[in-house]
Amino acid sequence: MQHFLSTESWSQHSLQEMIDFAKALKNNKFQPLLKEKSVALLFFNPSLRTRTSFELGVHQLGGQAVILQPGKDAWPIEFELGSIMDGEAEEHIKEVAQVLSSYCDLIAVRAFPKFESWQEDRQDKLIKSLAHFSSVPVINMETITHPCQELAHIMALQENLGDLKGKKYVLTWTYHPKPLNTAVANSALMIASKFGMDVTLLCPNDDYVLDEHYMALGQSYSAQHGHQLTVSHDIDSAYQGADVVYAKSWGALPYFGQWEKEKPIRDQYKHFMVDEAKMAKTNNALFSHCLPLRRNIKASDEVVDSKNCIAIEEAGNRLHVQKSIMNTLINHS
Ligand code: CP
Image (cartoon, rainbow, N blue to C red; front, side, top):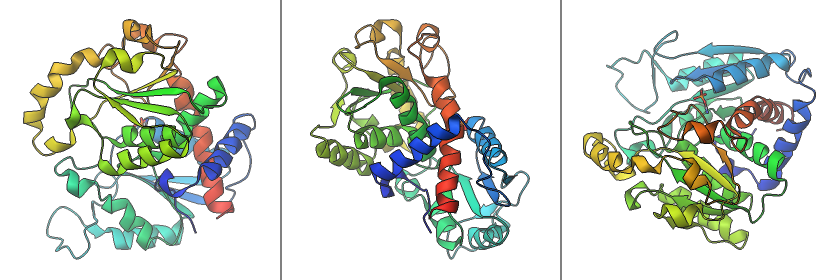
């Protein structure tokens, strides 16, 4: 049995097979691949795209989705092993995993970091515990990475650019008034380098560089394709000649739990917003973002409304790649 917790444990070839099947599903939406199967979708955090696309995807494949929001319409869940449960949580992930496994054929979970300690959050304990105690495959719907978004992103890039090898890919930090999850940035770095793109991470200063684990993976994948992962704090040179600009905002890792200290620093970098002047320096680059996106904060109206913006296509592809992932885990693992 295989889980889909991170693309890290899947080869480029296996991921490409899932993307290729997603492209086939895009032209043939309704196939009984999950007939008489059920999928539990556990949401600890809000969602528009993930929730809609998973629920519809299960339906289109003939299965049944059950959506649960622990702490709202389901019991709050504890996930620390050995904890004395004298707080809010009414049940433990150990029981949750076993009970849901007895009802369902797949469990998918969204559980963002708590943003109090990166050393704690980077361990991704909740999904790892769930996978450990589950007897059915588990899918990551975003924890400290966002692997479903990765496949939708690569699919949209391939649909627009064909072969991605050697294309200049700029993952740019962009401003947001709140410190956000690094999950999509970690994921973008991994998947772009894994698929052979020449990746530049553009961020305001060294505090915004991503976790060493994902930087090392990006470096290793880049080296396998003859590239070097570049870190830049210089907007002009980073955008120069780019084929793809992917924007995301995230909180600086050294300031986890001290966000009041990070805010005045972050507020100095509002000019990282993606705008037409920056895009004009590129090689007519495609622009994308995982969404949701604050217009004229993260990217200007002109960029988001331009023909080069593929954010809607990427969001649309979430439906197809997730159906392909579910089919792989249930029928081929
Ligand atoms: N990109 C993404 O996962 O969107 P939602 O947070 O709306 O699910």
